[in-house]
Length: 46
Image 1 (cartoon, one colour):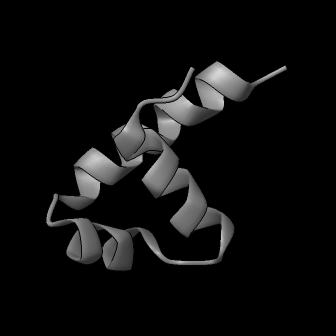
Image 2 (image 1 turned 90 degrees about the vertical axis):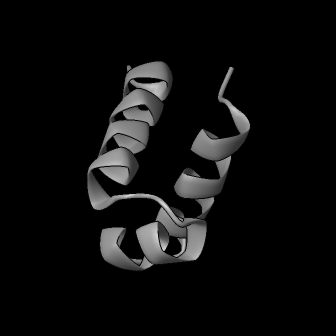
């Protein structure tokens, strides 16, 4: 199950939003966005 922040990041990324833009929108670092995306890929992977 994805956390709320992982869902937000995944949704924004799926709509083509860049990592930098996601970070700005959510008020987090680009590293945090990358970590959340990594967690999403790990949870939803094959």
